Every structure is written in C-alpha cells, then in structure tokens.
Image 1 (cartoon, rainbow, N blue to C red):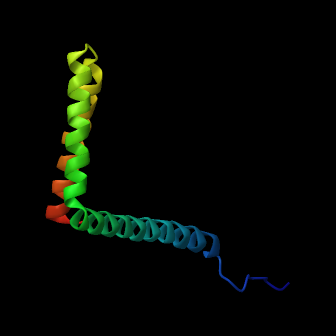
Image 2: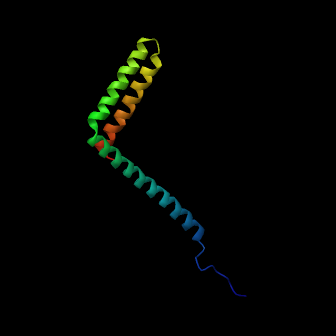
Image 3: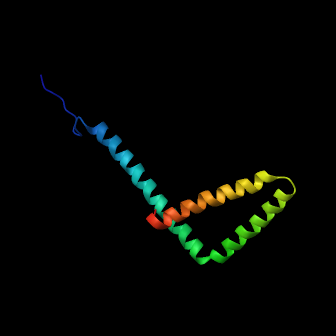
Length: 95
C-alpha cells in the first residue's frame, strides 16, 4: 500500500487561515495609517476653516438650546470633547 500525501502539507489549511488573518490585520493597520495621514494633512492645511465651522456649529446649537432643545448642545459638546481627546491622543502617540 502506498501512502498518499498532499504536496502542500498537512498544515496547509491552518497556514492559509493564519496568512489570511495576518493579511486582514496588516491591511487594517495600513488603512488606518492612510486615513490618519489624510486627516492630519487636511487639518493642518485647513485649520482655520475647520475652527470656523466648529464655532458656527457651536453658535447654532447654543441658539437651539436657548429655545429649549438642550439635546443638540449636549450632543455637540459630547462629540466635540470625545473626538477632540481622541485627536490629542492620536497626535501624541500617532496612529
């Protein structure tokens, strides 16, 4: 009786799964770095316009809060601080 063996080895399915998971992980990291670079480039080139838009949005939600819709001001402030802190952390430690 002759033993048949696969030319790819017995661990081939396990290796394919590991390579696939590593490729997904590396691709995700590269995509995050690309998006971070795009964001920092955009913010450094258009920082005045971004601040102006944020200030106008703050004025609008403050006026809405004065008319009784406090949820919009709370949501704006929450997102402003949340993403602001994430931006600061990202600037310190990078993507």
